Image (cartoon, one colour):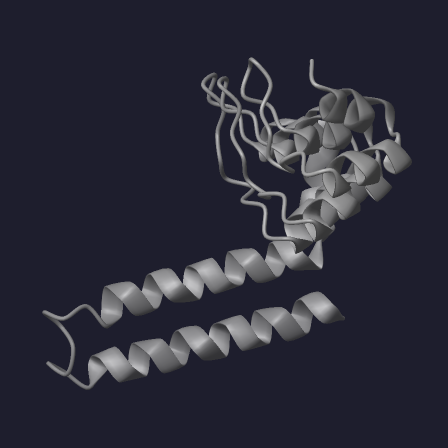
Length: 166
C-alpha cells in the first residue's frame, strides 16, 4: 500500500499534506482501485476527507468492486463523512458490483435522508430529468402543455423545499 493510502487510513493529516506537497497524486489508486478518499471515508477521518477534497480529490471514484467513498462511509456508519461527501457532490445512487448503494446500509439511511445536500441533489436531479423529458427537441414548442408542466414541477419542488426546511 502506498504511503498516502496508509496516511489516509490511519488519519495522519500532516503526512497527507506533506505527500501532496511533494507531488503525490491526490487520486492515486491502490491495487484494488481505491483512492485515499476511500480509506479516510471508511475510517471516519473527516479532516482528511476535507483536505483531500480541498486538494481536488474526485468525490465519486469507484474501486474495482464498485465501492465509492460514500458507500464506504455508509458501510462504516459515518454520518459526518456522509454529509461532507454529499455536500461535495457524491452520488448516493452509484451501486457496487453486488448491487448495493449507499442507501442499502440501514444505519446510514437516516444520515442520507437528513442531509440537506442530499435532498437538494435529489430535487435538482428530478427537475433536470423532467426538463430533459419535456424540453426534448421533438416536443419543444409543440404545445403549451410543456411550459405548464415545467411550471408545475418547479412549484412542486419549491413547496417541497419549504416543507423540508420547517
